[in-house]
Length: 106
Image (cartoon, rainbow, N blue to C red):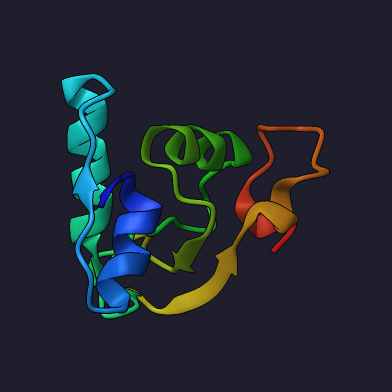
């Protein structure tokens, strides 16, 4: 079935296959393929991590670039650091100051 990343992931989890369609730019196609390849058996094996020192602005920027809506927060901001929290859309939806650091409201 010709699809985008979310449906391709869902289909793969059910044993099917999804083909990323060509009705988008080459970069958008590559981004869709990248999103599917990052997803493995229900887990993202190399998540984008943030640190408590990142700002809400950073969250919005990375979300816009990569399409993720939740991020693990580690002490170092890197995979392998100690998990100190998770930030999602619900955490940032009503914040008015995008310069606030994650640690200030987490």
